[in-house]
Image (cartoon, rainbow, N blue to C red):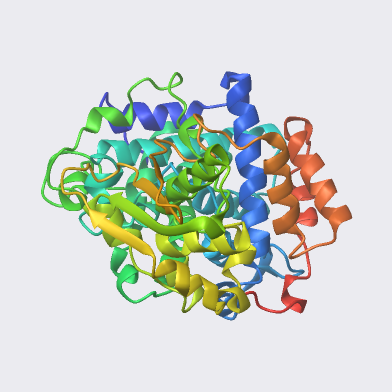
Length: 463
């Protein structure tokens, strides 16, 4: 039974999400959302070639209407949300800067919900639902103290806050009223989880966080739609409340509803040009900038010095070349790959390239120094020392793919082509790209489901 809404921040947020329609979205928000939809699909299609996807897929035995992207299989909506979420995050090429990885939790959940809808869902409705998901995921994280406060306690915000993002997107696409939308979001807190413990041994657990968040958010919205009530005080300062549980201090519930309809959170989401943890991207950019500005070649570098925050050191400081998952969390590897292969893209992380002896030689020349005076989210200072003894330093405050340093349209399109080619023919990828570019004029999103079929399962695992 739906409950009456009050004027608490979560009530205002739920009312906004429930009422959000395409017509309320500024043109730049629509265009950016379409880019992130395309980028997430591409990351997930490539992820169909991952070990993580294939392991998760073996558990998706329930038949249904929802597509496993990059294959011809259809499974139940919840299985699809889980498995497609794993695929989207498998190669660390999905977007960041939201809940954190908003695309990998929102898109699998909302597309799975569309597959089970009896009515036709338009492209405009899909865009609005995705915006809703990104908005809620980021607002939850900001209200919980922000990325550094929340994640530094050991929580992985993709799993904890992303579940609520997925629930909001599904609530919007299913047309739930404001009270039921609040129940969907508050119920999703009971599925919030995800720990950074994977960082210590290179576990694949990180990849499951996106899938479980998509699945949990979908389930929360489905339960709410059937009349299952969420905890009304979960965002109050109470025992068992979300904020007190996930961050003991620095929580600001008012941020759940600040500047609704003015501050669109999808606009602060970032694309990822490199197949690594976002924490490594700024350093790769600094390396690129310094080589271009000095006219030097990577072969002239004798030492790479990094001054970085304690948080970044713990997250990305390991010198890994073993399995793909831990290697993608390694900042020294990303720099070495850029030096050896002239790229830190996905191909630089293949098993063959990870075994290249030149990588270890360069990583041995990477010197990492923790600066206790740096803030957790400060980007590292990169210093290159060359064979003639000269040096150059740079800190890139916002990495490529951000609003301050955007990926150019040609680079966005090239990334899409490279990743989709891992699961489908170029002609089909072109049709998918065109459909997303004109998404606001798409009358039936089932066409996207058709275009997301592929043959990734008939191609070798990329690991």
